[in-house]
Length: 122
Image (cartoon, rainbow, N blue to C red; front, top):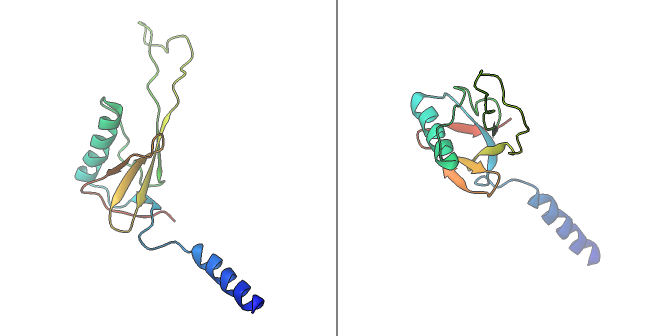
């Protein structure tokens, strides 16, 4: 009887390691369009509260998006003296199999990207 119970528990634990089809999985954007780029930019601009410059291929090769504040410049145009103490902001793109969701890693807030196709990252 004990062996049967142990076998059942072991089987249940192995089964728990499988990812449910609707669980969040790291994702990348596929076939980016002007609309999908605009959706990503809109979410990031809203989170930052300012206009952010993003590459056209952002989140197409990796599920991680890291954004650093630009370095202040002196009047001559060279980087200003001093250290930047701001930490870069990190986002992760995930999919639940239906939607593309941008997650702010600082607070876990989730933002659905409209007009965007994504697939689970390989």
